[in-house]
Amino acid sequence: MQIPPFDRITVEPGMCGGKPCVRGMRITVRRVLELLATYPDRNELLREYPYLEDEDLNQALRFAAATVDDDVTRLNQVA
Image (cartoon, rainbow, N blue to C red; front, side, top):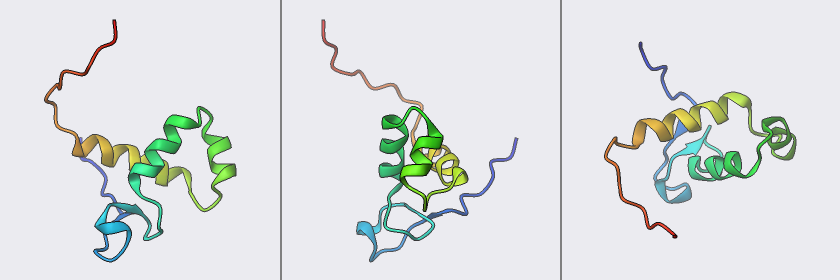
């Protein structure tokens, strides 16, 4: 299976500290991931942030998955 390119993820040294952003806008991939975690309903998220598109969300998720390695880190657990 070939992974489609990240044509909506941009990195510009002078924008957002060089962090990956969506389509050259000042919204980072990290922020999009936070929004996806906060809004259980994608349609509501897209209504609240009309400049984002569904494919922006998809690519942010794919980009995050592609940049995380498969090593498991032990997390602090609460008893």
